[in-house]
Length: 71
Image (cartoon, rainbow, N blue to C red; front, side):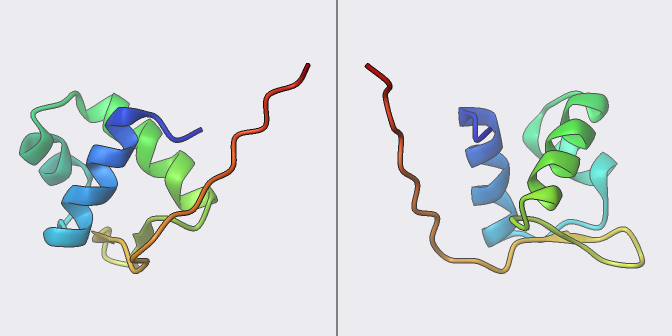
C-alpha cells in the first residue's frame, strides 16, 4: 500500500539516493524500523532499488494508480 509517508520516502529517494536505511531514516526524521518496513514493502513492489552495498534509490519517474471502490 502506498501511504503518504511512503510517497515522501519515494520523493526523497528520487532527489537524494541514500547509503542505507539508517541514513534514510535520519534524512526523513523517522524511526529506523518504520523506514525499514516501508523500504521492504516498496522494494517488493519494484519502487525502491536496494544495491548490494545497502544503498537505496528509486529509478522510476511516475506512479500511476487506480482506486476501485466496490459498491
